[in-house]
Image (cartoon, rainbow, N blue to C red; front, side, top):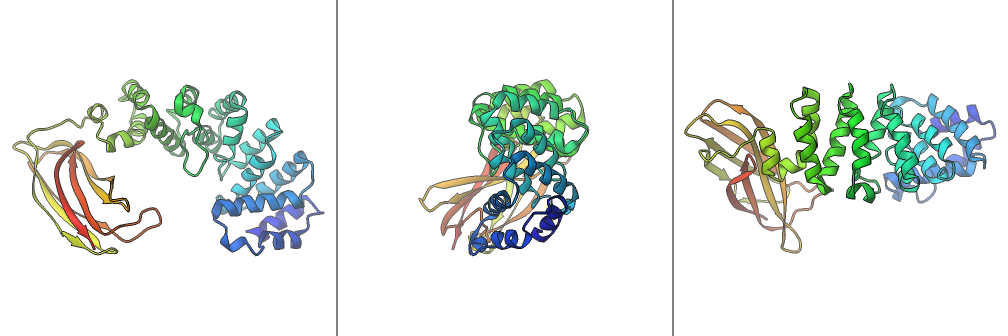
Length: 348
């Protein structure tokens, strides 16, 4: 990628020192850098080898970006990173650059520094992006304004009051692009974590208008649904049914780290089961002897029969985002937000 980048820069800037640029990128610290550290290192190195004048550098980078293969969408985020680091004093030039660089890539991280430093001007620009003909630019209006965007600086102002973000989402709520609608849903889910009532009010207002909007709401309410919020569950038709009970709930009570927790059960009712959201949760024992619960969805739908058999497994193979500890853990079966059964098991 660095070779391709260098060759494209030379086509737009003859004084570019390709060999020394490449040597500077792959220095003796390169192998120890994480993904975003590598991006920042590349953009910092670009700054050394490009002209001192920011506008001139952006002109070169915009022309270079047009020639870069779209399969490098992740790697191409170095262009936006350059803007984030060196363009805060040049708002207009930087907004134009981020608009260009987001196509087949994403400016969602870089835009946040401009939201923090120029909140009113940036939000006005993003509202214009929300009506752009290009789906990548429209998505940036939503994705870049997410209050809790993963791997990014949180937007405390909009965690407290997301009104200005909601103005953007109002424009995008019926967008023709699934790519954009997914971002709207993720933004709503972020909002729900700090302002659940706001999302409940939006759901009451939007639900049932069309299938696309219902999908956005369902995906946007996923945290509230996993938390068993009764009001939200009812909005989506998942009602508490006292006639439902669990039978034949079995699981392997001792497993080793790296193994599988296998479990099965039968959902029963004296009448048809109806509309169900079927989930399970595991309360993981942590290093401090406290528990951390994670909810996993099994299925949901309308079931006409009086019983339904479920068989599942969960892998205890260690992953980068979760470490497992020896001791007693708990498995719960959840139907429409209600825990119906719970059993303990031991991780060895």
